[in-house]
Image (cartoon, rainbow, N blue to C red; front, side, top):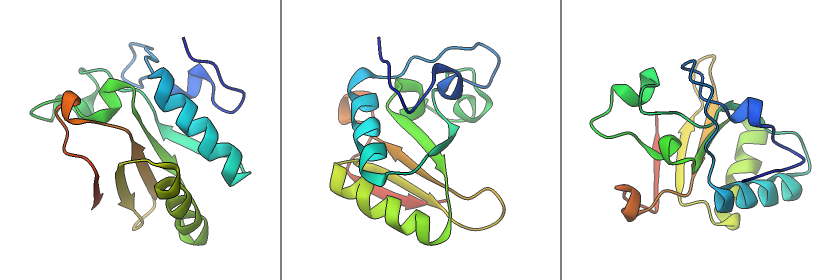
Length: 125
């Protein structure tokens, strides 16, 4: 079971309606470490996603969110740059960058080959 003073189960819950928040303990420790280094609130726009979540259901195989080893942080501009630098230094190995339009965020994950993911990698949306 994970517990952190910076991130609640409610903000990590799957938004498909199932209400699951099956976040990986080690991932949450790393995310908490990043939050302590960043020294500012981090707004989670997407945490855990079950296989039935609309985004995951469209994929051939559910991604890192469905393993509980990923979050999307709503952030943009200079703050996104700062968080991205810190996330790489903290050891996050899956990084997605969405910095255009109105829904700007940075995806951070600790997916692995065991999860069926190629890591380390960086991509843009």
